[in-house]
Image 1 (tube, rainbow over the protein chains, first blue to last red):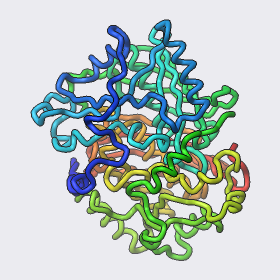
Image 2 (image 1 turned 90 degrees about the vertical axis):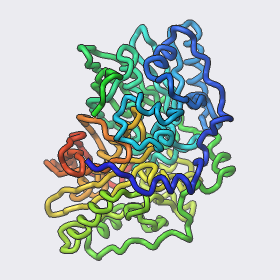
Image 3 (image 1 turned 135 degrees about the vertical axis):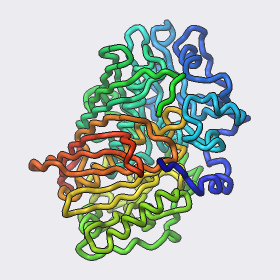
Image 4 (image 1 turned 90 degrees about the horizontal axis):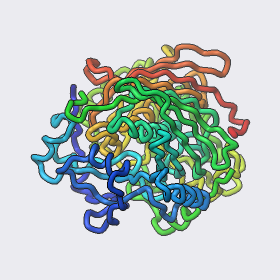
Length: 252
Length: 252
């Protein structure tokens, strides 16, 4: 396979830090993670000791969040107080500190050039506040379900005035994946089947309820629905099949 | 439904033009469109007379395109010479020039505030060159199929080193939609069913072959596959159901 990507290095050099991207030294401290919590477990499972994590948690409110979004967020934060629900923190970058650390990454070193590893970032956190994906996920580990609150910004347009089907698919994949990770740890999407019932208006807030339906060996079967805040409008329904990964094995 | 999106207006005012976003007066001229071509027909179908289109065509090569990407692009441009294939131009913005023009837009005016219509942009063109979705679609109208050449940048990461499933779903939706538009004109995704066979490495080039399988009234059934440039690796297979829209009718 041919995988070169010429010109990117020089573009990066010319542009430097992207507007809105976090600075290494000025980001917020990491969100508190209780010992034994899902976030702590996921942290241990997903991150490698040599990774440098930029500790701005992007799942916290910012000025672009609508009143409804903030109200819902506060309601779920209340639910977190007795420990039945948990807010999942969300970070943009994961990079290796030294070039030799790259060899410990679980992807094949040949796939992404060493100097580019520090440049990659999570797709859903690549936009400035309010322009792209604004979301937070709450997890109920006992009930094996998650709730994702999502406000899609004006950079996610498909048909004029509405979110792109791919933007909705991205959030559905993210929401289902977060639910699959409760029992599965590190997982990868194998199938996504989405019925788009109605288009989602830009800047509206939707709620994605996901649940684990079945677990068969390394296969996790999930489903979700996407509704308006008042639950009267059903925007989408979807199912997902996820596979539990072995971090020791190559993905290719 | 509650659809407010507070704070965005002030954010826009503070930030002004986004880095990398095109300027109204300095963009490239529109790509030539032959009279009677699909691009010309689509232009008539999709754009309204009151819309101001920023005429930078984002489906042309830029310095971030890899050697393989440019080679494939050139091969398909050769195929366009006899008229059997056609390159589809791609624009980032569509906005109304005057506030009263907004009423002629086919979405409900209440859904997106008037002042925000000029701020929205196509999801797949929201990143700077090389960082997000780099793609071009070629269409064969007689055979009712399209070929999308796609290079996913480092801002589309999911699992470290690989594209986010949502980024692939976005390109699959875009590719299938472009094929559905051959007979359907303006279409909307109703179902997307994707089997992810293997993860796609960041910065690699893939080819998405889409075809129309069946047409039933306003329903268009399509399928596609995503392969490496050498065709040896099958990354994904998908089917899509699209609905032909009536621009005179509201979507909600």
